[in-house]
Length: 189
Image 1 (cartoon, one colour):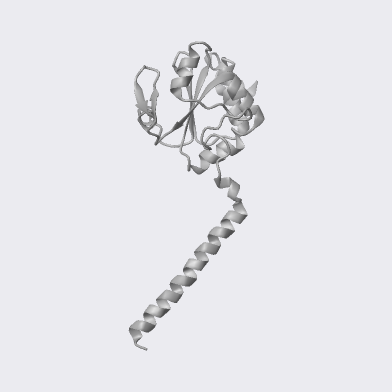
Image 2 (image 1 turned 90 degrees about the vertical axis):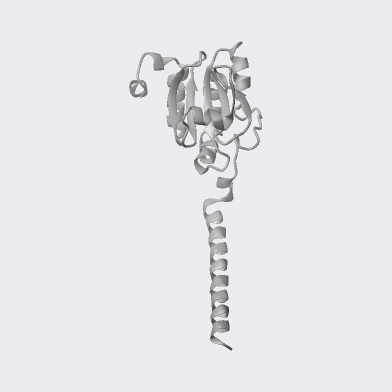
């Protein structure tokens, strides 16, 4: 056997062993972490609105509902495969206390930062979801922005937040205390 053929055969054997190693590593990671960590539970599972989930809606629908029922808007910017978005959905938005509180006190709006769905913005102009994300300078996900019923920005909450922290901010905003005291002071009461 020539030197060249021997080298090719050795290279293929190394490549096969490496491929098997990668496959076994991936299987180990899925077993260790749990496949359910990668599967959306609520928000990113096609917008299902069961009674036990947050009733996400489009911004267009929320603006129309706001004419009859004045509530704070909760704009949740996400991307379907974002690990922290899925984690927030699984560990925060899937909790009964959060679901009940958000559905009662906010117009919850789900916005895919790369989405092409046309939505009505507060100024009456239609934009795609990704145009709205760019207009609001959303550079990372998850990001939550709270707006008053009169379309004034109240608070921006970037990144993943634990349930207790998310609920603290939500209570501060829903109670109207954001108008008279800082979040720090509110959290100490």
